[in-house]
Image (cartoon, rainbow, N blue to C red; front, top):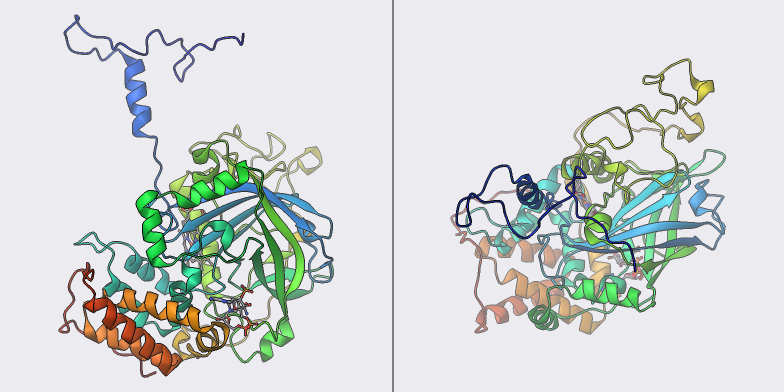
Length: 512
Ligand code: NDP
Ligand code: HEM
């Protein structure tokens, strides 16, 4: 028989009784000195950490990245060399819902990957869409406010969403994907992942190319309609968790093909569109897919909180051979995530096991809340500053080989108007060329149903104006579906009323 473990307090003292509190007399009040009870109550009060401000509801698993092709002419990254196998963690998520939200809601899905490479952690914090709603980070917080609850009603507000989107024509491409079949995948296994931004690869000769990362599902693009999803939510709010967890438990490991598109620095200068604009894809015909390998998820977390809730992904985590680009959104994200983690998880969030690199880490960060690495981890206890004279006695030194080639800049520092690009062309290709008739009709229905909840006609018309710029059939299809939705018995606008007296903002409007 296994040895029995003694129940102890956090300080290690044996716990005499975990059933009966210490009271003054059998029917009397409790004594303050029952510190075990106080410890228990206090710990329970601290069991929750702040949920992520976005992407709060998530599902994840461990796996491995395997590189099957030689792309060494583009990158020196050790984890991307042919034959390399790298342990990894994936966390999928919805964007808007809180941590208890139902899984099968129409939303963009987060697709965050952490690769534990021999050069430290490489994080690819992408989505299941190759583009995004906005192209300037100034607009991110406002966009997220429209996805969350109205301050007065505490309800989600279609009026706010379409007000913002209709004043941000760059959003029309992403909103179209959101309202298409891909806005409601059957499970995280049935969707692609995209790095979305343009990144860079750097080779042994220190030459840079621009790159897009694509992860193509091998499980197929299965989706649900809104009606199907409503039924599932009536049965379970945890449909994704059930499906992902159980599939992996059954030993059926989901896989994604790992591909890249490459653009040279020269091509980027000549490119007709801004290759660093997050609302644009790189057309496949011009920038063909290059196979790199695959990844699979093959192990569930032993403890959801420790390994998935505590996971901290950040676009700032790159490794030699892989880097960022001038994409303004990406530049802001390089700051934002580590800042969020220090708040959500604590100063030394990177020492939490799921976030800790799988290699020894030496640096000159010191002390701080939750320091679990014991004072300094510079490699020499006398070297608690840098530069120092102890480099030949273990003190950590710089590695200049990790330095990137210089980045050529063009133009003056200024606030450049980001509203001057074509916001409709790629969306038009998607709706009119890529989608078939059934897919288009479902898009119209989904979009029409969502617009039906908007309580301001001016906002509706401004939004439909954008769809008309994409294609008149798109506008007509959505208008018809919206009218049908409003005429249905189930129609019930749930947002805080906004009347047509609401001041209308000009600029970025439908006529542009
Ligand atoms: P292609 O015909 O070569 O590519 C179209 C791609 O669209 C497909 O390969 C597929 O991407 C994706 N797709 C198919 N059905 C849907 C859908 N219902 N919702 C969203 N995406 C879908 O043409 P282009 O490369 O010139 O792209 C045309 C348009 O396709 C773009 O403007 C963009 O809207 C969309 N698209 C393009 C992608 C790209 O990286 N070029 C990626 C995804 C969408 P996948 O293979 O990634 O599944
Ligand atoms: C989560 C900020 C754009 C994908 C988050 C979090 C923040 C944030 C603060 C919560 C992090 C945490 O608490 O752990 C921003 C900002 C953006 C931006 C400031 C733009 C300026 C994007 C884009 C994508 C994206 C463009 C995808 C291409 C994700 C994902 C998560 C996330 C997948 C969840 C990561 C996880 O699973 O833990 N974002 N974001 N974000 N973001 Fe963004």
